Image 1 (cartoon, rainbow, N blue to C red):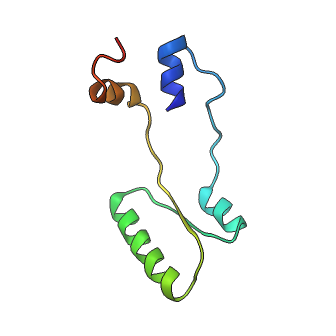
Image 2 (image 1 turned 90 degrees about the vertical axis):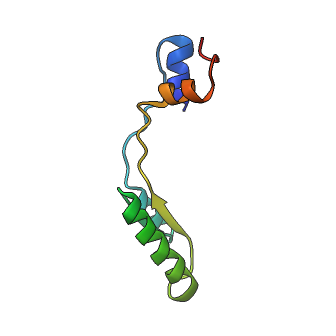
Length: 86
């Protein structure tokens, strides 16, 4: 979100590129159950499993990593907030 706003306002970005890391393993380092999904079907399956598992077998926190493509944020913002970018 910050990246596209910086680009619009200043014509450049600064300090907003994060490195890639394994969120599922990061969650595990803190005792949580971590999962990464790529599709809606995977998300539905993992969420269902996490909810049933949490209640019965493995209590605790579950983190589900869902990658998001932000490359079209400017277009989406313009559609949702007409006239703001002009």
